[in-house]
Amino acid sequence: MAVLSSHPNTEQTQAAAGALPRIRRYLDEHTEALASVPVLVEDSREELLLPREAVELLAGVLAHMAAGRGVSVVPDHAELTTQQAADMLNVSRPYLIGLLQAGEIDYRKVGTHRRIQASSLMEYMRRDDQRRREAADELSAMTRELGLD
Image 1: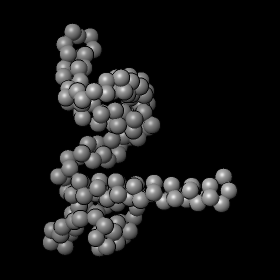
Image 2: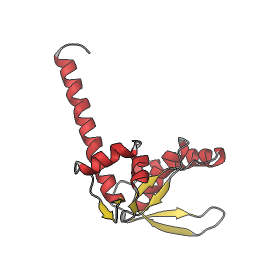
Image 3: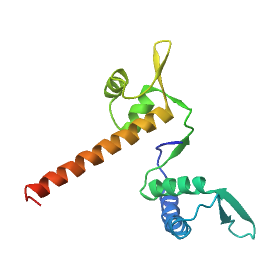
């Protein structure tokens, strides 16, 4: 699933900020490979069993909401326009088209329009984050070697 943004109101932001620590604590305390996580429905004795992956996704959604950023969940197979993909990357549409033409992100053409599968965009984002982390680690190592820290 990919995450796109919209903005929560103050009440939603506060509710997310309140729920997030409880969910994170539960996940941290129950690290064994649970297939499902029990969730008690408020004002009820009813318990739901949710897939652990869904609860982990929910924790990510709540983290964004608590920070004032909204989210929408998009299936991996969804196709995005170049403008939607550029917005997700926070880059200009021409820059994104350059990435497509350079083969950095898979896409297909529908007539004259480019369509990007959400899973391809997320894979690019993961690779880009990894490259950035490696560059930062290398820069830190060079700083230590030069005694500049």
